[in-house]
Image (cartoon, rainbow, N blue to C red; front, top):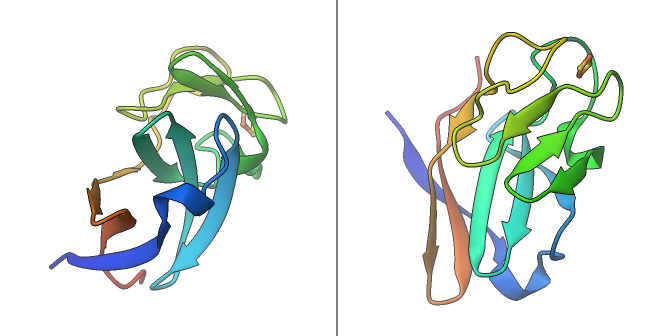
Length: 106
Ligand code: FES
């Protein structure tokens, strides 16, 4: 069962680049684009790399290791070598704070 976990004030998230956060044992890459925030699993579905360290291009992030791209809103892999989607986390912004729907990582 997911619970809403407060992560940070929206204004503390940098615009246009990723940030890694750890919450309830989950390693998450957060991306702020304007007033929207997207959250994907930080570890690339292809191999060991941090998507929070990737470059953002419009609505996608490019993995810094081999260059696969993932759609920020859905986590879908758009380009090889990744073929599996990134886990996506539900985000809400309430009273200026960013919350993620999470459960304890196993
Ligand atoms: S580790 Fe991300 S594309 Fe290979």
